[in-house]
Length: 454
Picture (cartoon, rainbow, N blue to C red):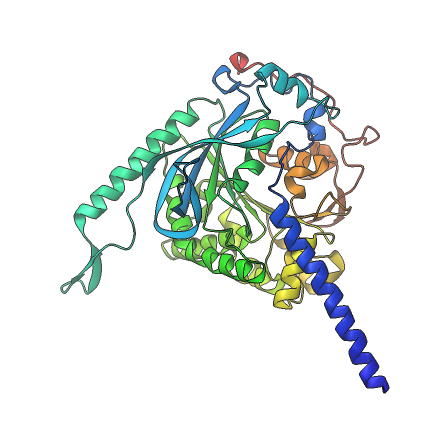
């Protein structure tokens, strides 16, 4: 064997090893939904005296009802008469999904166990009753060509039905808003390999730990196709399919009566779905002389573990100004994210945003980063549990920062109660000792006001 053959052999071994790591990461993602228990209590919650004192009586239950909007095709079973699979639907359904915490826990028991970092028992978490409350008309309706105007028009009857169905959704949303003094909506868009039920767990737990304020909504698109690589590629194209539906939902949500702010959270491949939808909306609103953030009431755009090519993302934000669609944009990244390593391997990207390092950014781009208003990258500098892809809600330190960002609307910095380490303008690091007892900026425990004192 000559030197060239030896080098080729070493390269093949390295590639095989990397493939094994990648497939291991996929397997971890697939197994993540088995035997679920509640994640650890965020530090900020555990350090707050009576963190659930402000929860209104109607929401003091050992479950959480999550409002959902989905373009998954119905997939009912004998055990679950209302359920949704990974196939695509031309219409969007909405309803309520119950997420149960524990087996037979009372509210007081749940509140006590989730107020501390040292629980006396594990708390199982699962999906309970799912109730579909309505369905918006399909966009795949017969269109009519208007010779005089030279355009395709929808049947006026379908248009009237669409507005009626939208108003029905507004009534459901209004009922949820009436339960909370905080008239804000938190929309979560999941990533690949997520079933309909999987996506509910992240937002249900974050909402609970944040004191059950505002209205959580899961936008569930047709992900979770079987297979390893083929499942990923199928999910990726389903992410393209759902963009039109997400756009129409965000526009409708921006006009919903009673909604004061919208916070949009994308995770993993869901960040691409979110950014693509916002890009198209931003182009349309800007062309019409409108401000996207005002039309959508979009206060915070949060991108967690983004499965996006860094160069594509740079175009979206610097050339197309997608960041202007929200008042504040925050991205959480981690070099230790194994699942993002899969996408890096598949697409041979220069770098996926989810694993971006500060040293990856050229000097000229760093200057641009400094000048993007309201834009922040949070670099999680330590290894989190498992595959390191769900750290935004399953790591108590990162989840604390998310709660302070979305629930408290706080900018980064110790002076705002978020003791991140500033690396450069627009780039902050979240270290292992975030909000530790030794942290000088850790917020002092405080009793939250009871809901009747709001």
